[in-house]
Length: 345
Image 1 (spheres, rainbow, N blue to C red):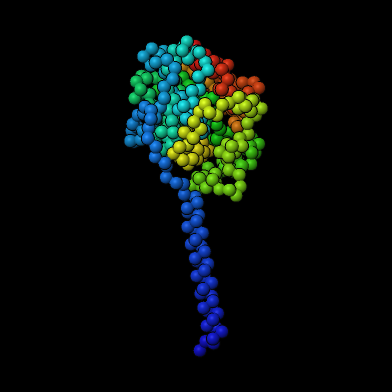
Image 2: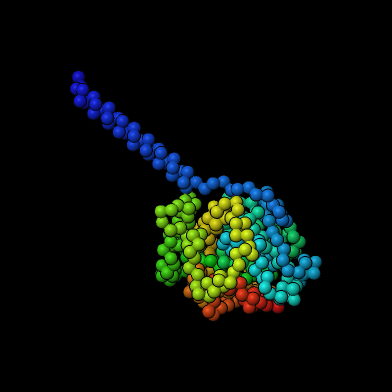
């Protein structure tokens, strides 16, 4: 028969493992709650919108000359943390002079556009094609993308080239793991990024289910742009010093939550792509249109070195490198004029 001491030992052992199990279950419950993004917040729509093929709504805003007397129709794809309210060409009189009708839209999960859990470069290109159809833009229109929106122009060039009259990529964000980049070059440039941005990019690529937790936890630095510590260069800081925050609703872009807007952006931008932009064929082999890329030589967010490589690989890209300029060059009237003249003049 077991001794009293042995009985106590068995009892203690059972209690010990029960405690371990309870702690493990508590940890798993905490982890599940921590990594699971909250559902999007629902807001009403105050402006015009269209209903897409899958039932989602896409909110948009019109700028420039009225569509009825426009010579050119252009769809503007906003950048990270921005929205349809960003009038990218607002300082230029050339919009009126050249007869350009501009439509900006809230990308899925931003502002007043419904989230898209299947968001990808292809899905956004198809959204843009539908937007052009619903607005009566005809068979062809222009696309202009800024920063993260510039990266999405690659999807338009891949999936809807037949709908494009021309395209402009303005400081488009780069995915370091696009296959055509020489591994040594991509690795060298990637390591020049801020350490927190390197890790945020890795998480978006290899563990997208952790992106929400990674960029909201307090243990170590999240993505620098989300944290408000972006690696802006001197030209950008000068532009920012003259920026009036009261001139724009800073909360509007992420009003549905940071996951459906900023975090999904990161998953799309730095995740696995189903195509390599440097393998795209010339969308205008007959010279009936043109594709332009602008890049600042002092951009602290998008590496000019890799942008130069892309431009050399794609001979049909008209590459414009702006001297002594950072990431936010489109805030300058001179840059707005240059883009408009190259595309529409």
